[in-house]
Length: 374
Figure 1 (cartoon, rainbow, N blue to C red):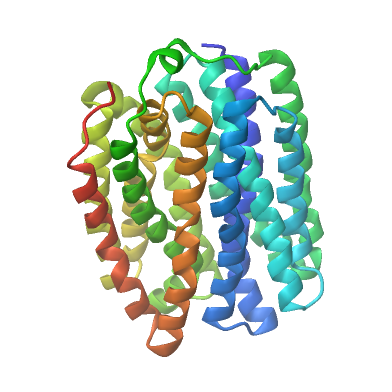
Figure 2: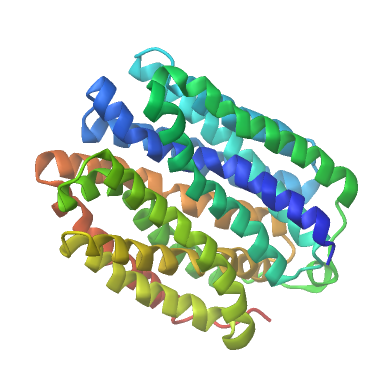
């Protein structure tokens, strides 16, 4: 395994995924400064996710046909510029456009980056876990970064959020030079057979996981304020815990999979998510943070395993598999966000989060019919 290129790609992954977490982290500030409704902020989350859901598989298919390594630094910069512009002015349509542009940048990054990480690591599941850990670290850092910048100076300071993108672009350039990533296929990729039926079931489970994750990302900050009776700090802490658990969960996922196999670990992770989300919804007070941590572990332990399973179910279309598992299925969760927001406006935020308990159970049922790839 070529450790140094993987390390650089992981750090760049952290820089780009800051902007996935930043959109949700900006939601409380949009509500406070611009008086946006739940439905309005849900639309912002949707704008960041919708184009990603369409574009990312397209970039994955492109990566299958020919290598596009130059896209990595460019996509990181585009992702950062979109979020940096989201706080400029007060126009809701322009805010939607800005976060949509950021979503396209983030979408363009992942398929080629996942392909590159797989090639330079020789197909190591552990290496993919470290690559995914970088993205999770970016998610976890986003609430702190947004709080440090926007929390101290308001949305007008959002242009400063472009700085991680500039660092990420430099890391991508250095990683690509050292790795010399080509369009060559691995031995498994050349000899394998695509299993579309299993891949479809895996994708369905990831969609369920995605809706839970995006729904909680959008509303856990506001919900924590309601359930704990505290201010914005409790919301920032809840979102930080939701994202931070991804660091431990991703590392644990690779270790557990090496001992027990990927499919059993993914199944038990979904079962844990069912119980933990129920605790988030029903348990008030400071104990809520404990269940947020459990939810984070349940959502993140299978994260890198989803990617390697998808690549192994579609060994001849590794870029497409990466684009779908990292992009389309994950971004579809954003489509449910406006529905949850509208339900929260019509009833309550507590009622809107109730469906999130059942979705991981549906995902578990889909996974129960899967076998380890060939």
